[in-house]
Length: 79
Image 1 (cartoon, rainbow, N blue to C red):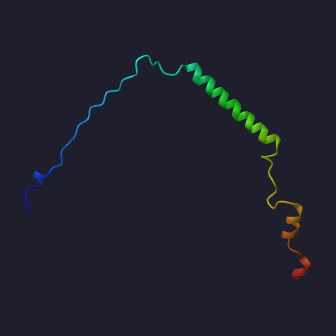
Image 2: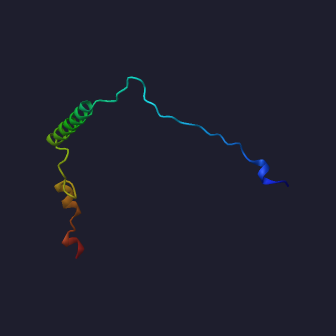
């Protein structure tokens, strides 16, 4: 069959050097802080609006009073 060492795949080595673009100092800290604060403010306003619209009110486990009455077993029909 032959020697398995003869059928090696060629290896490729790539060098990588990290470099910053010239004149790029990154994002200033105050921009990040301001963006986080504005995001939290927007989230708070959204939650407040949903609260005022009744989004977070919990309904009972069976829903309306009519549904509750239909789910209760009637003692007269069981006997």
